[in-house]
Length: 177
Ligand SMILES: [Fe+2]
Image (cartoon, rainbow, N blue to C red; front, side):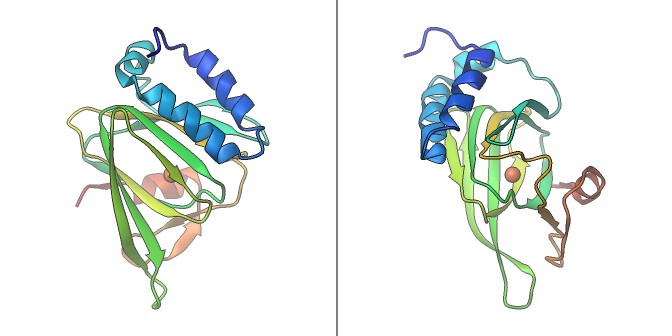
């Protein structure tokens, strides 16, 4: 059991893990250990109220993520491996596959609460809904420079892929259901 949690120290450890040969596995191991005491993390990390990039270089992107109750962020891909760890609230991850007609079909659903971690492959498409009454906060780690990679958002109704940028992201944000 950890006795304290230090966000800067965790970011440093994640940066180091990202340089390992099997980075997704090394990152997941660290994330599992951190969220195993999610109360400690929640006490140490304030609710910043919005997404924050804690660190980014060519090997790793480390984000503090904030999801608003009842809201769904649009389906998107990452084009690199990702590890998610939740330390406050609860989120539902809906995973999608491309349907034969070019649209999106839901293929899986994973609910993550405080204390849970999840690894996502580079080609996965997911939407995230905050299902708790209070915001859901997590640390998300990606095995590359997320802000400059070319990736997509998907219109949930038509499945049409559009470029991932802030304007399109905001435009596709929806209340759950
Ligand atoms: Fe994502």
